[in-house]
Image (cartoon, rainbow, N blue to C red):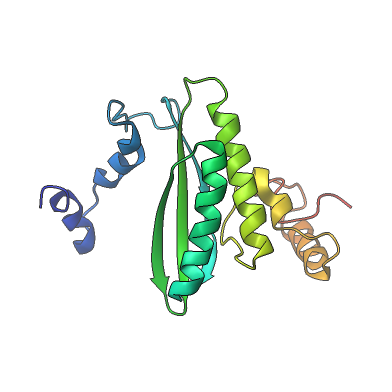
Amino acid sequence: MAAVEPLYGMTKGIPTDAALYSVSWPFKDHAEIDDLDGGDIGLVYCLPIIPSSGRQARFAMDIVEEICSKYGAKPYTTLNLMGNSLETVITLAFDKRVDGEAGKAHACNRELHEALKAEGYLPYRVGINLMDQVIDPDDEYWHVIRKIKKALDPNEIISPGRYCLGKE
C-alpha cells in the first residue's frame, strides 16, 4: 500500500511527482528528483510496439535479454496492453559517474532498435540520435514529410533534425 498510495491521486487527476522516484530506483542511494538532467543517473529508452501475443512478447523479450546481457545492462521493461498491441517501454539506466557507462547504454540501445526493427517491431518514439533507424531515404513517404515540414517550418525551428530527410 505504501508504494501505491502516492500514485493513487494520479488516477483522480491530482498532480504528484511520486512517479519521478521511479527514475532513480535502480540507484537507491541517488533519489535525486530535483535535477534529473543534471544528476548522476542516465536513462535511455527503447520503445517498440509488439503484437499482443505471449509468443511474440517472449520472442521480443528474448532478443532484449540477449542484447542487454552482451552490454551488462539490465533492461527495466514494462508491457502495456493497447488493443492488439503491446506498447513496450525498455529502460536502460546507467551511472553517469562511471566512465564508459553512457556509451555502453547508447550502444546497447542502438543494437536493441536494430534487432527489434529487423523482426518487425517498430518503435513508437525514438531520440534524435536514432532518427536514422526510422527514416528511410528511399521511401517516398519521407520525401512528402520533408515537403510538409519545409512548408510549415521553413526556418527549421520545430524539432530540428527530426522527422525529415534534411535540407534539399
